[in-house]
Length: 555
Image (cartoon, rainbow, N blue to C red; front, side):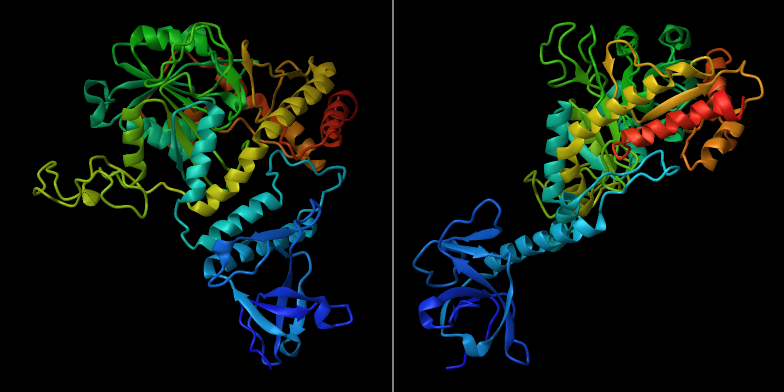
């Protein structure tokens, strides 16, 4: 009898490369329907558990659509066979569509792993090829992203929930919500402090927010967007963070918040900042976009609300940055400690703040149902809010001026795999920092080298270097052109002094003094990479090139 092969069916087939007698026949699963020639792809089934080096899938009783095979079954997918329908002895069983979906996911994941061996082969060092930043990923990210695509859901779902949980556990913070960029994270964080849910503590137009001008514009832009006044305090070298001794002079009766980045992964002086925040009852947003994995051992407990300090005493174990203030923010752009391409997150221990952040991220709606869910509150048609008619659908009631700043589950899937690598990434960045800094110590007469803030363990984003002003016949443009000629990538400390940027003309802001250190950064600072894709050979090349510039070629 000739059987027409149906994908998902199990047939009794002579095992290939034997004498093809029925004594040697085994069950095999058809992966495809028979083609016009009667051929189909098969995987053979064994009754013995697979060894560690073998690739196999367990078939359970629940996987069968009807009667099951009599013995335990393991599907070997390391070898696929193209077999003709004439070899089929009998139809034995059939698997459910759900089982076939699971099996195909496993097969696809295995094929991606094989693909990755060719797509992401190690890049051997070539002199003069040192990018300042980049991503490090392998088959795990690709497998996750394809797996998310196979769900067909696309918007935030199971991978996003896993990512938020992993971030929460890693950082040590109760609430984490993903957004589509670090800039959006800063926007949501600041906007949430204007929420009517906060009552009299909500920020209002004209209130002042203390920050620094030496940093990335989107740490500052939300302050401007909500009609608040940025008050710029100078920074201090070699930490490149806010000069905490000048903050008190910046505080006025209008001061309501502080919003600061941990510059290039180096925590700012949280003890000093927190003492002033508590003394003056200010909000504190920690921009951790460049600092995931950085920790600080402070003498004061954190500010965050529910679960914030957990009753901890003073001077205990290091805590992750972002958990000291009221809100922390993250970026997952490829240059950062982990990536999902584009993406970010906001986190807090305060239940009121997370409610505001979710609403602002999700169009401003009052409803908190997850995508695909309805009536979580059990009062979808029973509310009376604003001037809306009673019973207006809660999914379409908007309590905040909001946006759509969510991510896709494909992005989250990538970051889930990255999270497993994060501790290693952070440690490599720290090791690279020590290696490069030690190699540059002989150049301290030419360059100001960065230093970690006391009581901190940075998660270095890059190696900041400042050309000393007194060096004759040297300028930053000349040095950067030299490094560029050697294909060593460099970057500036973002906006340098944001008040000097074209878009800041005509903006309302205030400064404490003349910001001389900020201007020093504007004119003389740059950075080179420390990302995990760089090896000691790359770092040695950077150091040797700088040595050549200062001690041989240019001086």
